[in-house]
Amino acid sequence: MNRPAGNPLAGSRALLVLSTAGLGVFITALDQTVVVTALPRVMLDLKIPISRLDQVSWVITAYLLGYTVAMPLIGRLADVYGYNRVYGAALALFCVGSALVAVAPSLEWMVVARVVQAVGGGATVPISLAMAAGALPDRQRGLALGVIAGAAEAGSMLGPAYGGAIVEFWHWRGIFWLNLPQGAVVMLALLWLRKANSRERAPGDRVDYVGGAMLVVALLVISLALSRKGMFTLTSALPFILAGVGLGVVLVLIVFERRQAQPLLPTLLFRSRSFIAANSAQFLVGVCLIIALVTIP
Image (cartoon, rainbow, N blue to C red):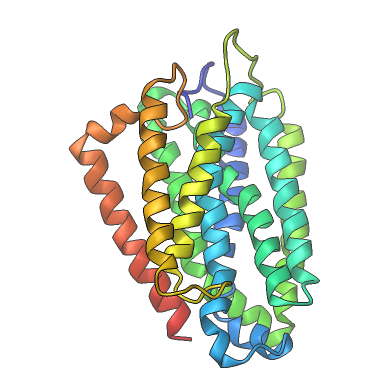
């Protein structure tokens, strides 16, 4: 996301922007982990044997994959076409995906629906950060970003407890039906704030769709290589081939992005040791967390 342009908002309106952006991120972050405690019930309801646990883990993996891929690409779309417009469309897509998950008759359907849901959910993170940063003056920008980051972490942390409570007193499908009214509340708030987050498209603004497509392919292929059985039956050699293809696409992506005037992934960031260290630590923590969340329940 580019640095937001425009003047800071008045106190009450800035608070509403922060609340709206934070709530949107919180709702979509919940769904990263909300199914963890519901997976046993999902397996019983869809008649999935325990021998297919590797495949069931894709209910979580699919969301994390779509969530991650959506951030840079749709974040850039919001830079070009406006925060409110793209945020509203992303939340609508998240709600559509939630409804598709709620009516899922099979594991395969559920995994595809989770990707749809995740693309909309992942888009809320960069847009919320940009909205929050633009709502407050420069000296309070750290506070604004902290509120959004805190909302995202709170959603991920509370997801298992939230999902477990709904499963206990209702049904696992209710987890996803409840996303619809929650998303509607945020979209109504966005309509109220449409002038506060308006942004005119600057001449020459463009979106790096090719870079986005390569990022999707790289993450998908590498995820398949690491999934062992996953949703597909992989031979002993195929995972290594997929890993090689994925890493090859990553290298092509790096070369391609270095030649772009408006790259999706600014390669200069990867020359910063602090940037690399922070993201590496976050990656390792995420890997350990997801492994524990999937296998322990």
